[in-house]
Image (tube, rainbow, N blue to C red; front, side, top):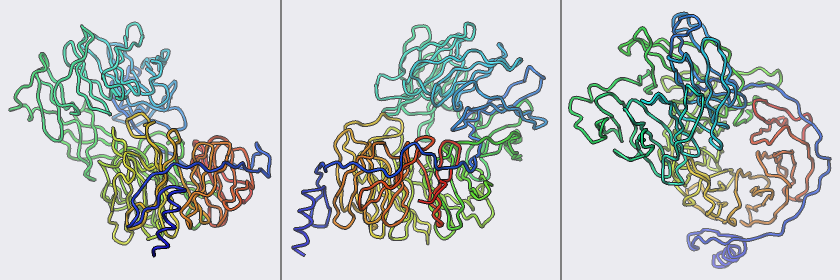
Length: 631
């Protein structure tokens, strides 16, 4: 026993830190010699075939209603975000149910919709690459020239001010934008927050004479008002509160279930006695227990969206009429793919809570409705005993789906949402793997405005969820893998709602199924880690263009290879080889460090899967590809 401890201490001093009951955790940065890698095949050789565009869904970010000047009929309008393509608007006749699609002039989608009846125009504020302000003439269905503010990627919402101008909040600059509908110009009124790490001016509200109200953060949280005349900002109320309603008589905010009321002329607190009963219903409880945003129609009934459907509800919130969105479902970008024992490919969309399956032999596919009530997307997918285990952002959700049983998500039967790890953990950046103990393990990033992460485990026999917060303090889990003995994970300094933390040393760690770190190694500052993969007694740890190889028997890093590209998806091909995806496909022998094959890819690939028959599939944007030859 003493000799064994001495050996462990020696390795810790050389390569990192091994954690035992006797040895404390330490962090030692090391540098191994870099070794190049030989190519047996020339680069830029195409060896893949497109199979299908199997991932199709609606991802509705915004909605409004108006009387259409083209035909005088009421239209329920949905803003559909299409990852991997250009977003669109869906116009639904509230009486006939007929649908019309109009593509945006640019960008993936839009949260912000605002109807200006006096101009007969619909304003659209887009995301996630340009932050455009689009203006649509509803009579002619023509778009004005797109406007944007340099460096802004999102416009979150749009609200009409008492001065006739339209205001909106942004990401990442945390600006208050002002749009002049007469002149069709867009200007910045400055940053809403004084904190340079706050990136979100998330929601802007009008309805207060001479003022706009703005909430956002997320390094800090703010609730601020903007004085239109003096172009100045000031705080009021509780930071982080949501605006519930604004009327001529009061501003109502809500924080952790408690209401506060303010005078809209002075912003001074006022008594809420008798005012709570006046709050309008703006959400509707559905049979699944979720509360969905709703909008009032001319008939007095309500309209809203539930997953891949829209609904109409009686004025009293009673009878619910769930209807299919009456336009074709567009192809969307693929976020994750895995293969089942029968060679079927399963996957999830990059944005929107839907999954799909595809038969690669004939290209036929199936798409689900939303798998859970939270917005966001599925990151992790793991098959076990014919059941599909999912992990999803933004609700920190664990979901289990049995493809052999009828679909009943509204009653939380199939798929079934298990215990969430939110609010501490919300984004499963490390994805999901089967652990050596038979548990379903997932790596997570912390809540908005927090640097941190964690791990979770589902017990498949009981469906109980366990979780561990911040095993490496202040760092999210960026990749997770496992072998027959341990779970392995990497971390980095990314966080939801915050800029990257350049001050951290990213870590590689070994985790026991019992729930503790048994080894950890810190990389130098500036090195960012992503996915990891266990194969052939090694763990592949990409860091920039380098691939570090960790030996699971000696518990030490044993090699560092220059891959000449950043790595995306990692797939074990057999007991000694791994497919490494980036801009090229590299096949790495983890024992010899030699490159056995190299072919150009259509783009940088971040997800791929190997079938039991040895066929390799990967996704890029909306397309599922098959490698033409087995590796």
